[in-house]
Length: 219
Image 1: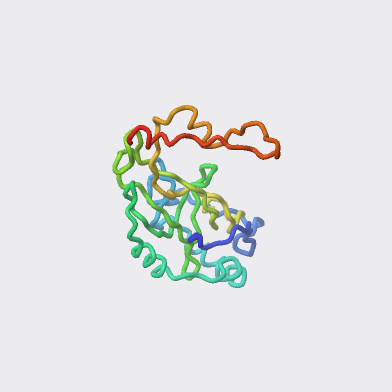
Image 2: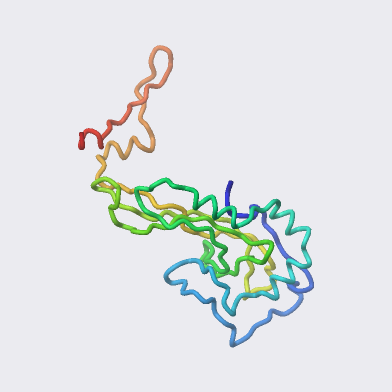
C-alpha cells in the first residue's frame, strides 16, 4: 500500500474564496516558508507563512469532495509501528520515516503549500541514506546513494488564489541503494536489455546470460 494518502486526481478548488473574479490578496510583508529550499525541496514544518485560513476554508466547503479523494485512511501510529517492526539490516543504513510535509518544490521549481490539515493529512514514506556516498556494507567499487521518486499531492499556491486546491508532482527521497561503478561494459549493456541469439528452429529466442562478475572476481 502506498503511504501517500491522496488519489492522483486533478482537483480545482473554485468557490467564493478562491474565485478568480476576486483580486489576489497580496502583502509586501508576506512571510517566507521556514526552510531553505536551496538545500532540499521540502519542508516538514508550516511556519508563519502557511495559508491556514485558505486551506481550512476550502476543506470546510468541500467536505464531500475531500472524503472522496482520500477514502479510507490509516492512522499514522499504525504506519510508524510497521516501520519499527522491520528488523531487516540494509547494506546501506537508512533513516526511515513517515512525514507530513507542509511545503515542497514541484517539478517546475515552484514552492507550494501542501494540503495538510487534520483529518486530511498527506503522508510521505521515505528512507534517507545515513552515510551517503560511503561504501558501508556494499562490495568494493560500490557506494550508497540516495534515490528519489515522484509523489502526486494536493497543494495550494499562496501567491495565486485563483488556482485553488490542485494536484501536482513533487520529488521526495525514496530509498538508499548500493550503486556500483566498476562493472564491465558488456554487463552494463546486457543488464538493461538482454541480447538475443538468432531464433532457433522452433522460433524461440535464447538469451545470453551475463556472467556473475562478482563471484568470478571474489571467489
